[in-house]
Length: 100
Image (cartoon, rainbow, N blue to C red; front, side):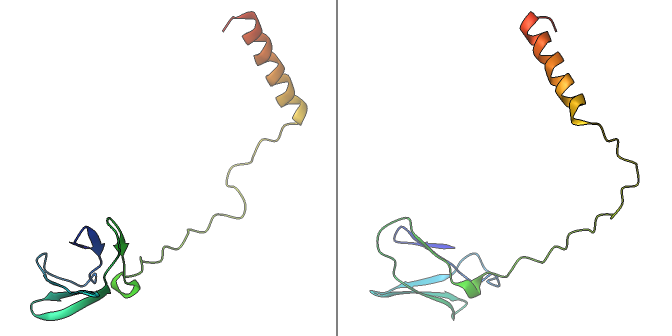
């Protein structure tokens, strides 16, 4: 991104230099790298606004999720819901008595 008159304009991801030439005209902003036009944007109204040309950003690499096993390697312990109810009641009684 380059800052021009309080707004920000994108440059292509392929831009190699940190110093570019800016031409700020009435209706457009032109950005040059080593004399070659690399970006053209309409002038933004107001301040602190951003304009990103979609072609300036490369899509992030696609990350494929790892496949999870269909069956767990370790058996899963299953308990009836009444067990969790009893745990909750016991914790409530401990907290009510103020003992830890």
